[in-house]
Length: 211
Length: 117
Image (cartoon, rainbow over all chains, first blue to last red; front, side, top):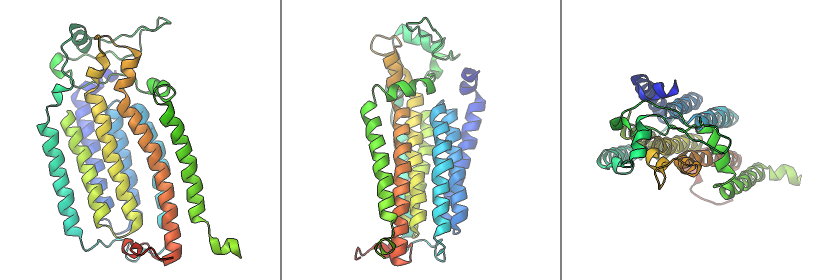
């Protein structure tokens, strides 16, 4: 089912729709004068990015995107906008807006140039016969308990074989976190608590404390 | 749908965010643009994970091992860590904005030029 979906034209159409939503919302975020509307557009942009993640077979990241970005960060920014009522000049752009636009357009042009002038096929050129058989047919992985259905089966020809991390990502991220990435994972916990304590310290009202 | 198209979308998000960071005067709007840039980077990471993973999946001997699957998911791991760090960073940045607003009664980025007080 998902194998049929991600190789067909429906996935491409969905990808372009999600991309259009994301980029249109992003443009509203940077140009809208009303900051509350900008926050709503930002949430829409995050939803579009989550849709892109789902289309690119990254279900876990898509769910995390909805929970963290749409559910937490957008709300946090919305609260900040509403707490700070002084929004008289919120929409104005700085005097260097032309320079900023030129910088953005130049960077975008450079990214397009690199994306289309790098030979990405070099990275995933597959010569091994077993690998080609795997790409054209179905993947099966037998683990110790005899379970053989860890990887999706995908129908595709060799020319189309560039598209495809057909790994069930959700069930492999957890084991990765507590094996290969255990040190960054623990450091991340330390960083989160340090950031939250730091945020509380910064926002503390010293005059009220002293009085 | 190819890797190039995904990279163009990611680059568009990143460039729009860069424009916002440079052109906006309100600090909260700058933070919002910063989040757009984060998302652009993550879309590129997931795109690479999706389109260049088959080579990593093959492993050295052509077989698919558990280790090879994990190495193919490195882009996903990057996304997990960046999302967590972005959440912490946003909380801290908004706390700084509140402290700045309390000190200066302003959220304009040009008013942050002098570090007195």
